[in-house]
Length: 435
Image (tube, rainbow, N blue to C red; front, side, top):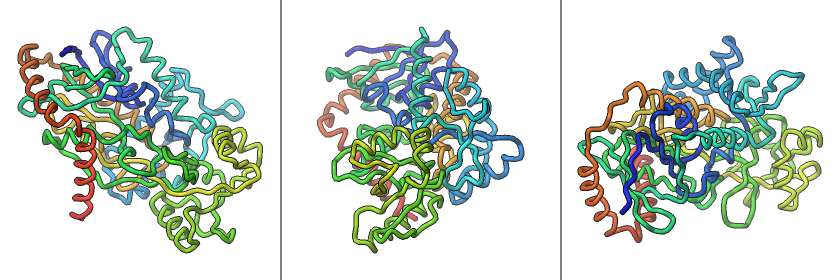
């Protein structure tokens, strides 16, 4: 079995992992692996935008909007860190060439559900793709970073609550050992566990199952957000999200009789419940969303990709109402981390949707996810640099631990992916029952 050695291993190539890689010093070797192709992360799918603190007068309302959406179960310290870091993150993104919308030469801010005022920057309706593609381009220029695609993490190599690296499987089915001074889990969400989700289907929460097996603390893994408006389809596969910003700009929801039945900018969990209640009353698997009220100019300028995708499904949103249905969208829980994205295991960090740093509480506020991922991805890298210690484990010792782990994995590898899925789903249900 091949063994690679690196200073920092990042499992995942979404926004949080890429931003962390950009903040690791160039004299340290970074290895990034991804279960699919490099662009198959949910960061590329984010439509709406990214929040930014407008000015000091905006601080209290930004904080309150986030806490209220999270049912006041947020960690206030983490929310404060995110808000205070937002302007610096936006400046850095613009330095990487991210092209946020402008109006009269100034940044153009929009508003989405549960935001008391406009504070969201965007690029058409593909903000996630714009940000993540520019970060990926910057990372690919770095000589100290190597990216491996189609490499699946199978298990963690651990000694006395210290992460030494991982055991992985390549696209060819060969096992690969990766010894790392520090490891960052940036493996995304859990949409692949659900029949209807806006996530990529290969995002199945493997890191959560592996963390559980090694005694790493999890937090609120039953906090799973359902997005209220995805395009209804009888076709299998990932659901196409109709961004919150569509409703923030004024789109209306109607029941089967063409009547409004809810405030369109309610918190996602509340609006989801309203839609499901209306679907049951109507006896239909969807409700209607009317974007025509926005006008053709707004739709084509602000939401061109939603327009194009709906057109592919036979709906012209400048003229037609479209059927929408709730679907699993985001994971607020995850691997418990502190303010610096450190887990309860030494030398192991977690960032992005894989982690739970308390920013989102019980329900995420629209357009906080990209910001939170970037802020705490950077903090993971900064913490690693600040606390850097050369690992004392020899290659021989790592190889011995790796061999034992491989022997254990081999006995169950055929069903391992399904086993991990079932372990995560059982733990989610156990958490729910405990409450």
